[in-house]
Image (cartoon, rainbow over all chains, first blue to last red; front, side):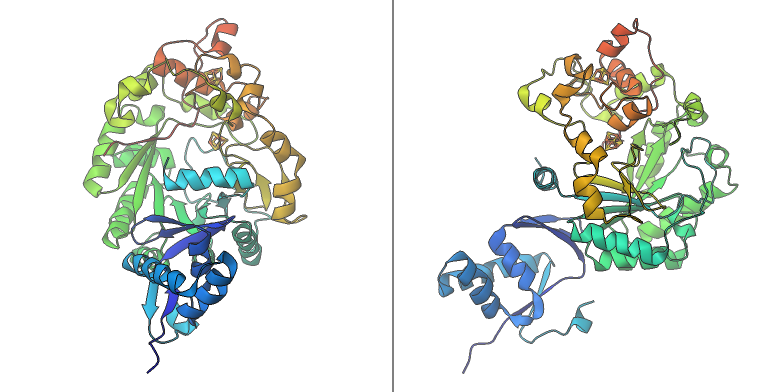
Length: 102
Length: 365
Ligand code: SF4
Ligand code: SF4
């Protein structure tokens, strides 16, 4: 049986801007600020709710940053869990349509 | 250095307008005695023009945006504008007198994820506040609105501007802010009108009162540190800039004009004639401003206070030379340390009227 896919979606309760390679994100719920490096930014920008995390990692991380799939996927999962814990990203096993996000 | 400061520094290096202040109207339902604006609404940007400005700012990398006025809620499209800014994922602050914030508006502000609502409160006493705003009942309405915002969980702050009308009330207003559960900022700022008219500056507090405030632990934290005149100037300071105006901060007037800061009325271009990016990157005025380091300031670079002075180039501009000292900041440095500034010494040590600069001192919670 195929492993369950993970879909990630940017929360509407954030403000963000990308400066060079880095992205600043602020939770509008509690004003916590996060700064993502270039790899984090690549994952963040792919978090459209429709692209599976494995695909984001493959296309945006492995190809652009020259890392192996397994290693990159493990790091990406940890990163996604961390942002999800702060309510910055939501994680689902099904694609999310744009109407469900905002 | 906080993450925000770090990103602001990065924005400076990359030439990104990280913050913007957009006045969507100069019309107002109050007539504050110290206001530096005229209240003519003729020629204001349309809804679509404002959205286009917000789009351009967001595409240029703007993260923080203050929507202000005049009274922004006087525009019927204010919530449409706020909603658009949030849809562009900007960190939105709303500056308002709050008198039009009823239950529906407070709930909508929360729902939109506005980061903070900043409200001016001139006194803990209704009659004093209303005498400043010249709107009977405004204190009651503002206080009620603060309660509604708090009940909705909206981060709210009170800014208390010091002037002759409310002399000596800062502690009581700070206490009221604590009771209301909101942040408190005291601002000894009466600024000249944007056309250079300085008549309202007579409303500023006395130098003695400013000195008291600047030596009061509840307003400045560690007084010894804040008033210590011994910070030595170093290469980093001389290589640095006065402030973020024109580097990472832009101001947009209701008439689509671009300036470095709301308090720095040096015209840089019109968004009705050029794109924001063109103005930000190619305005001769902005590029001249950006070329000026602290070491290039003819008087301040040799002044003993330069390492910690709050010198505002906008106020210096209103005095005729943005490379020069700002007399109100000279007054503040003097009030902090008791040592005359270089500009004061050169002028024969007269103590300037101090209260029209812009140091914002966050209350110690
Ligand atoms: S110091 Fe003056 S010009 Fe600079 S950001 Fe502050 S108010 Fe604006
Ligand atoms: S105290 Fe006056 S002269 Fe000295 S640095 Fe500040 S503005 Fe310039």
